[in-house]
Image (cartoon, rainbow, N blue to C red; front, side, top):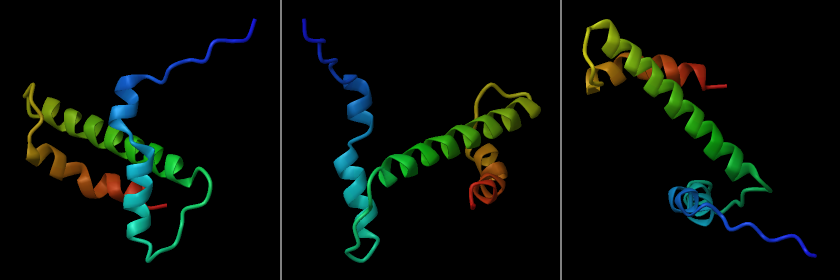
Length: 87
């Protein structure tokens, strides 16, 4: 029997439209194309950045004794997190 083809996770495909993401990146590259799976690597790096920023912001909210993260908590760690991902 042939193996059944798995259907893509509907939630994941709605969150990440590869074509749309790739076109938006390429639009900033003056007509140059992105090779291979570079767009996937860029998207995964972006998700890792967001996760690290969210964790740091949550820690800042905990430090001030709040259960909510606000803009000040995010801004407190934004530059540090950007520096970590600069490469």
